[in-house]
Amino acid sequence: MPQLSMRDAINQALHQEMARDPRVIVLGEDVSGGAGGTSGEREASGGIFGVTKGLLPKFGAGRVIDTPISESAIVGAAAGAALAGLRPVAELMFADFVGVCMDQIYNQIAKFRYMFGGKTTCPVVIRMAMGAGMNMGAQHSQSIYAFLTAVPGLKVVVPSNAYDAKGLLIQAIRDDDPVMFFEHKALYPRKSEVPADPYTVAFGQANVLREGDDATVVAIGRMVNFAEKALDGLAAQGIQCDLIDPRTTSPLDEKTILESVENTGRLIVVDESPPRCSVASDIAAMVASRGFESLRAPVQMVTPPHSPVPFSPALERAYVPGPQKIADAIRRTLDARR
Image (cartoon, rainbow, N blue to C red):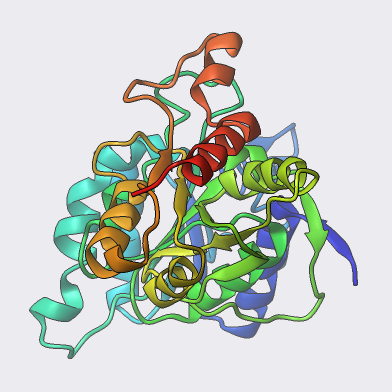
């Protein structure tokens, strides 16, 4: 099976879905590149991260649409296109800019099906690059999937690897509900085995990457990779944990998490977003309210501090929860008693 980076897996998913369904369009800033050289031909650079590279020459400017620098225009146009029968994939260059188009997302796109009594759908996908670790500063490094997870009517996807990214994006494009698709910038070059043919990964079905009786670790996005490193070190000490990647925060696979905690009696949630009103606090509250009798120790949350993302490389490294912080939290919960 071929190895692909997450960037190339997402690109492949877009190519395959656009070839399969002529209703699929892509729009965003620089998704096809500006006019280049004296020929006037487009560069087809594929955006700031190169994810949409190669779409323009294959599908044309009518389906790969460069937009003005206006997130509200991008998402508003995508919403209208979806209502008119297309299946748009809109790209926001950075997830941090979602606030500019928040009304279009949470007050319009998320509510169309409900407001019209199920007589219409809004099959729009909004792709967003997120996350710290690349020294891009406080306005370009946030993990804000918790904002949109809180909005009824939206599905929220946070892949941690190339295989899931391709399957989840194809599922998102084929889904009749609006999907917010978060791609961690630091994961774009990471490779894993990805089938060449199209496939889907179902929403609301977590991936259990490891099994163990000592504790349950739930990690989101890039934090899955850090959790795996932490568990590699702990395994040498005889500590074995369940590691759960939810894949989607809405819908959330509560059943898998609760069943794991029922077995282990301990929960550690690792989340790159700040701790207040986060996905980590949501999962912790869910387990505390529905699985309290299973807990043998207090729930541990491993998150950044309640602070903007620092620009300084040293401070940013301290900000992001790394393998050592995760391992320390696992040891604390193993030593604790409720």
